[in-house]
Length: 259
Ligand SMILES: Cc1cc2nc3c(=O)[nH]c(=O)nc-3n(C[C@H](O)[C@H](O)[C@H](O)COP(=O)(O)O)c2cc1C
Image (spheres, rainbow, N blue to C red):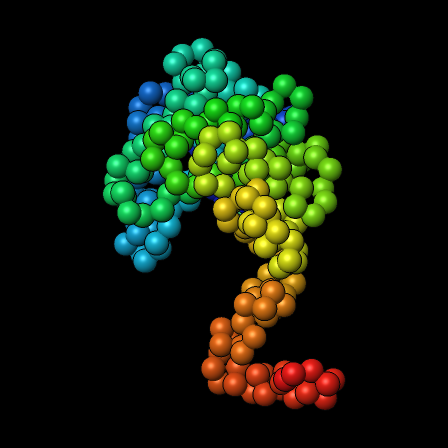
């Protein structure tokens, strides 16, 4: 068997036997047995996550992972009931969502991360995401987490989109407005005031922040302070929050504020 970087290759499966690009492994097209088995494996994984203490389940239907490859016409060329029309391409992801909802009960929040668009000609569109979100809502999903891209050899979230602050917020906004499902906005949300405006303007129900937390692990505390939500540093570790409160009041007093 070929060895790459010390790991043995595992068998790759996908909706259709299409490599992502020249030189990539060619997966085998999933059989009906594969589809039933993987659906069960999603259910098992969700149960393990709850047993391990997680309180929200998020299904990954984005970024070139298996369920997205069923959705996108770029990677799903099946001619059975799991491909073809939008309904066919959505069938397996919807079955997984319904099976997971059935297994975790009504009270555990169920999120689904989607690639709102492939960002590639001939690929998955925002109109299709609206249809998918409505169907996921009917299957018992609570929140659509609106990312994009990834069904491409160029990278996990690659899509030909102009990237600026909140560039994926319009996806969350449209899906929320047209289906009534809760949405989560993500992608280049860097300051608390902007995050707050996304929520207040009803463009999304939740915002997610990634790399800004790598840059500033206290981002949430700083955003709460700057937004006037935590003026007394009560959200900070108590062992030094009490001192930051004195420090802050001292600075304000020295500047002639009410302190
Ligand atoms: C180090 C790193 C690892 C990531 N891993 C994942 C992942 O496993 N699954 C996923 O859906 N997104 C992953 N992402 C993408 C983030 O969830 C997020 O969508 C993206 O970084 C955009 O948000 P941001 O601009 O706030 O960072 C990762 C991002 C970073 C920086």
